[in-house]
Length: 119
Image 1 (cartoon, rainbow, N blue to C red):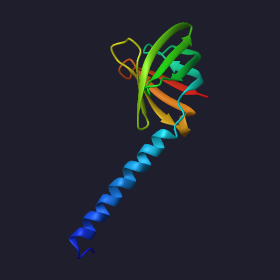
Image 2 (image 1 turned 45 degrees about the horizontal axis):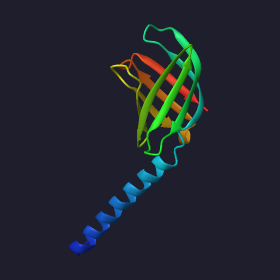
Image 3 (image 1 turned 120 degrees about the vertical axis):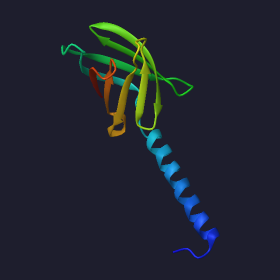
Image 4 (image 1 turned 120 degrees about the horizontal axis):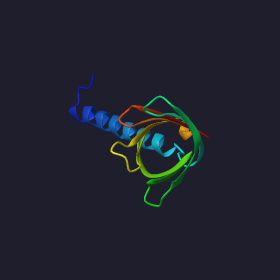
């Protein structure tokens, strides 16, 4: 397809730059801060409901404040569409960011608990 090696390198470089740019823009268009409704399932199968407020810090990390019968706090970081939250347990909460941040689908307790956040 490319007879000129420089053209091949330029084409490859262009594809890489575009891929990285679109990935960055996709992550930046996710608005994961605000107040969400929470529905979840504990590792024992019992259900819970409540709310969580997520605030964005100047360094790009996120603070979480859950109110689900009890109150919990945590700090999270976003990488692509994965939001990982340390909340003081052995295992973090790991959310997948969906719909521009309007829905977060997560697991916790090493995958034995589930949680869905919706704006």
